[in-house]
Length: 113
Image (cartoon, rainbow, N blue to C red; front, side):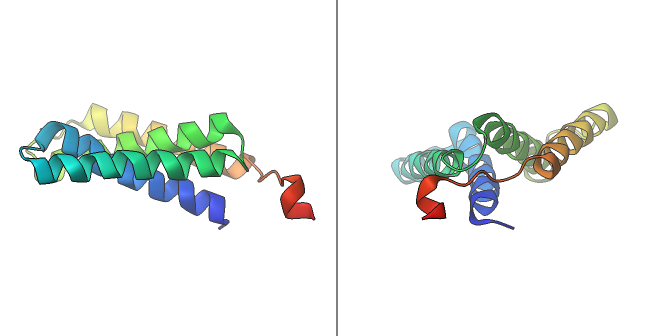
């Protein structure tokens, strides 16, 4: 896996943290952590976008974040399990995986030199 794909995946995982933080942060420290997660996830996503198609990066980023947030909500915050919701998340994941499989990394002139 390339460094750019690792950045996108890590950015998506960190997105789950800040989305949960937006809903559940109750004090200054939790809000500071949420803000740091927002900045870090967007930084990683933007860095990957310099080397990969922006649409693919964003779709994978949002797909990981959406899927992770739904799963974390069901496992840790009492969101009810609904088969339809899980099926739709599975379709979303198939699309994200498909994008990853059909997208090659574009090399910048700096990398070629």
